Image (cartoon, rainbow, N blue to C red; front, top):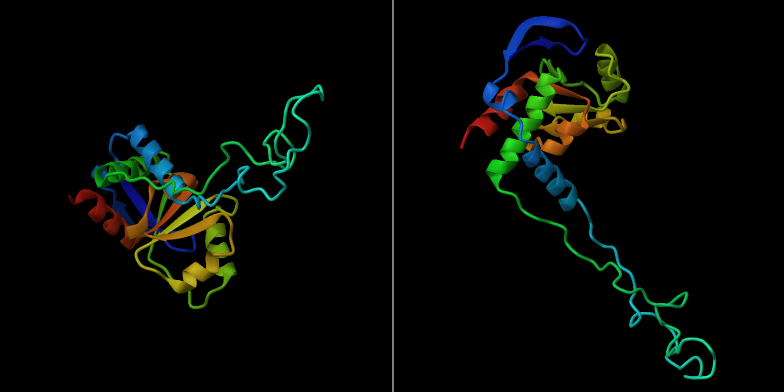
Length: 210
């Protein structure tokens, strides 16, 4: 598949980029995508949720009423889970949600996600660019050039560019990432991928080796 290369003003240049079918044209594996996205979201969880059990509740352990003769169920403590303010039965406890996937499966998932975006014509290749100063209006102007103001956009750069990062960090619909850090979740979560021309070679090199 060949894609035209654009400049940041939204104009098509004479350059073209040929996408490697081994990365952008594979047979998608939906289950690999599911596992990779599930791992990404699970590993991002803090796992700091905590509910107090009856042994952790502050309160008297005095028997609150006599055992028999009240006409109601017996009760031994105000911390009983059946009472308001009592402990919780089997409540959530701090835990780590991290789990591991092998590298080949994750690579297949990323290639599957990139293939879907290529088939949907959701990849936009732009000449390598940078901004002289970090201003949000610089990146807003770029989005307007491609009519992407109201779309979720993932910008893939070959290396970290501080001015570009600072220019888009205030935009909720835009996210920036290095080509070496590209992941399945961010690719699928974006409506459009804006990939710098040099990033294509890096992505293909990572996903065709080994």
